[in-house]
Length: 168
Image 1: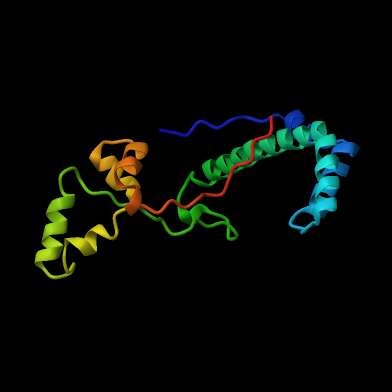
Image 2: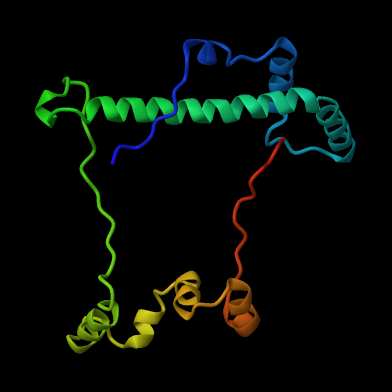
């Protein structure tokens, strides 16, 4: 089944621009990105950033459109060069080597694990369990992550993921 491709028009793409004010805001934010600031500089930056919130919202909207455009371009190019065989591709176009994901057939994980232990390729079940993720164990138990943490909080390390910024 072919993947549905979102369409962009010429005017959609040409309309993806920033006003002078929005570009000035982007330059201001960029100039301060990753810069350590003292307390006074932090207050000034926060005030300037917050005063430019309308421009920041427009920049964020452009970012969202640009992501969709990149997805569109990726899909169009993939579909275009997926037609024909590898021998039909131009000299400067190639596909990466095909990669795969692997899953156990239903009911086979424990059979294979026991066989690997019997063969001595896995020393014991504890060695195998050390490779199991908290999420996989929680899913296998059929409980929520909150319940898993409630029951086994002392045995689970919680590591923060990178936060996602939302601007609307």
